[in-house]
Image: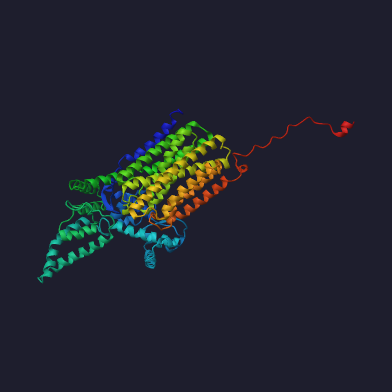
Length: 637
């Protein structure tokens, strides 16, 4: 039984992952999944409605689901359907997060901490909040780093203001707000175009004109002009013969209809879907959805339809979330193994680690396939890749040394980096278009991958050093054999990190020379990469010169975590330089806290050995009791 236990537990987790491959069941008869697969154009790329829903909800609420007071939670896609077709119900959902107590005070509450509100909760106070947000924007005109200069209250205020604006745009993405029979409205609009244009032509030529027809078409034009300014994703695809990038939002397309005189099939099908969902008619909704998909396939839009379906599948299986959960399980089993040294526990943890790595690899590969890019294109993908590289190191270490160290290292870094990636995803679309200077797969596949591999290996060496310090200082489990093994691991990985960091930095200089006409510009990001190379060189030279030994090596490897985190995240927070991408001011306190913890660990590493639990000399035993001697008075007697 013990022999098969690791495989059985790994199989259970694998079954949990594979369960995501099953197509979602229709809810109340509506083919919601089919709607989520429909492609739209947003942020410069084709993506499914499901991605629009997930990214929008994450940006607004920081969550991927909407919790209800009664009943199961709504998925992001279900929330988007409610928002676009049943706004009176969506307005009751508590999705707007407020963190600052002063902003909560403006909303009339006295609770402290993260709170969620519905749009109905904000109705009475939002005019005041919007007025403050507009005044803040006016006062910041011409200030380059205005986001960095905002107070926590102002940042929370602007987040709420932008969230409500996004919510309003989503409500106007399928039909004008307040519409109850959009399909009928479009029929009236199409029928009014001919008489309206004729009346307008007669009026311009000084001939008698039908004023009623002109007023009707003018009202439609005004209505759809407002709609074109509000609608968020571009849901109307190009017609045959048009450019493949000529997508429009619903309002812009209806204004174009005034010129062409012919309604776009996508507009009529979307209107039918919106009316059917609002009136709770699943048969009509599914029929309009199927008709639209057939039209897209017949009009050279199958590639977009296929891309939408693939990304929907990627969102559905959630490879990074599920691999993160399995990393935690492997990490816990590695810690348990250190306590009881049970080999079945270690083998079970190793099996879970391999499974997490496979799922992580599938997600990374699928994402590369969807983007058509190498693995690292932004901060989000760099976190994904660093976690993947650390897990690979952990598997190799555990395979060679079999001491649970690989489990702990890979599990901790894999979980931590995927948590970081999750928080980076809150800023919006993680597959956004690249800046023009970065749009080259050659350098993304060489410089970025190589230098990010250096980051991953530095963190692995740093975590191994942390294990050495914590086990040695606080426990008696750091035996001479374990200490020597950890020392060899750290030394070998630092050598690897030195090579990859150096080569990656040189490749970055060549890329910079091709892009900006100079090999090295003393940009903060370039200097951060150079710091890693110099610190690794310093570690190796100090080791070779005998200036440091085992504990010195570990202390310097721990401090390397500070250097690496600064190069990876810190220089972006400076907000200057050509590499200042992905600025996240909320990450600054976490980075400072991490650096402080590493300094404390370095201090522990340098403490005299008499303070280390694993190196304390055993207490001297009491001298054996000798034969008792008679008292002097007795001897005298």
